[in-house]
Length: 309
Image (tube, rainbow, N blue to C red; front, side):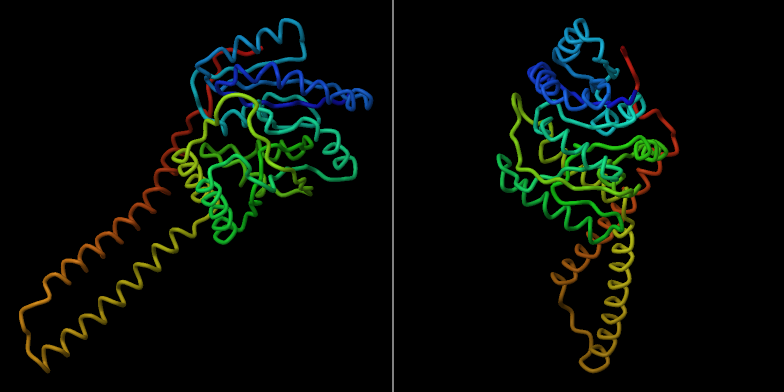
């Protein structure tokens, strides 16, 4: 009998666990009719509330519920990777516990797999409920990524995705420490169907993704799937070298014609500050890639398990 594994990363979601569980099972009769068993795998990312206790309550009455609890907060990327490793299903789907990923789409998503697609991904066509400034920068990020990277990352893409085992095995073969799942999905390829739906606000609680965390996450994506920033730093260096040589020629010519009057100190200070700032900026770009390399070569585990059932 085939198995559908539902992976649910959780971080301080005690208010949503029960509602998600009830909503999910409302949409599983479709799979039962097709002879597909469903396992529910919660990945607790070191929650500081009663998320683990709520999951254990569900487990006490339903053996289909499983949990992997981390020793601390390792991040959603680690939770997704752990879910892929622990899932036993022939089909695997990732869903958020806050019900922003509607379980009602699952039957339609599975039908596309039956038509021959290897994965079915979702994207939001609206960003209702998000601050305008956050939505603006999110759109700019996707636009930038698709310009500087060969890996396609769809604007508004969610982690909500139903995949066949072959796709998940391909993702697991990428054991890198610095993970950017949206890029990994695009990099492994396979035949993917995109489903659109309007944004749904959280059932309870607040998002754990503030502007700073999203900014750092965007840097993770850029450094993981593009070397364009390094090329940009090199081009900037070449441009400033050319400008420097041009300025030297200009000074020599001016001195030969008009002498060398003392002056221009304010402009010289501004130029020094500008060039120094550009150098530090380029050094920072190189430093980002070196830091990622440093983390990779240490070969630390992506997550550590405290409790599992």
